[in-house]
Image 1: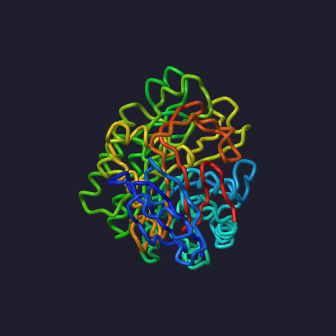
Image 2: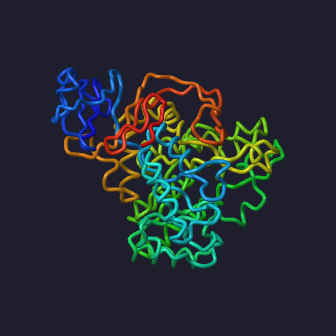
Image 3: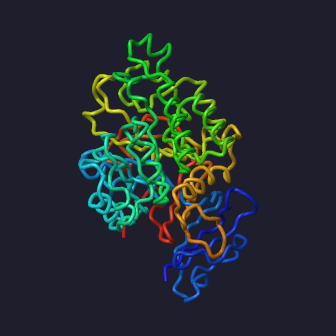
Length: 441
């Protein structure tokens, strides 16, 4: 029997400290702190428990990331399932969804089953492969969604992320098939005819720096189109990495109409804006681009309100040669798994937009519900599966890319000091990370 005793923590940061006993992957006791003082007495079989001394910490359900790039197969020089899983465990995640833009593309059960098997072998986090909506991400012909859904990986989320499904007829057919399969389509909202050659948000900063501009309308036109397509198909649709104030307004309208639409926001779109482009540093090139301060402010308010449902990292590792080049040639994307909590704490908790129960909602409960994970994002109660994250809310830390678990080091937060850090992560009662040290099976 595997037994873990977490002492002196506060679930959701509320109430008095408690001791939480986990046995064989399940929470079996939650009692006032100091009650279970003898670890050998804590375990029913007398074998003793591993004790995590957690005074002053907040206990949350393990985080779920709907949007992660693990790069395997094809770009193992930037990330692998193993290194990405380690980054996820260090960031407090117990489940991640690995996007389909690999090489080869995850548009068949052969590839999705491979990613799923690799995740199970590593065992640090539940790795759920995302299936491509169209063959080769080309947007022209639907992939074998039904076969992937019925495979051993049981694919429940499909996306061409990195590419928009620009053809409305293809998107309509995808939504109709998704309804029948009871799976979810996640759209990368970008009208490609409006973004050809674009590398930065279309605005005063890009104009002054001589960078080709990316208009808000490129995102917003697809968001409203797909909301209407989902309405007519009676299907669900999810909007990846919402980035504009206009998208927030459109999401609010769509939800008011009863359309089954959800959306995510990335940590970098909550914190950063296009003023970061002044140095022409490729680290700050991302898709969609960093917008203006007003957009970041609107996204924070929308996340607090629930118009934007959840936080997803869009963790996008890149090898050094793909970032250390002129801005227009840099590959878009940023690391995000290990810094997400700190960014959310700084942008949402510190100003009072969310409390810790709200953090649990946007980083665990809602993404688990949207993706249909039955044992993640669950209440911290006796009898529940112990997918848990122990957070030190007062532990400020300095981000250094070279010290992160990912193979790549393209963090936009280099030398930033962030509040709050993950002390420990438990996957079904097994400690996968404690004080930054990852524990493989």
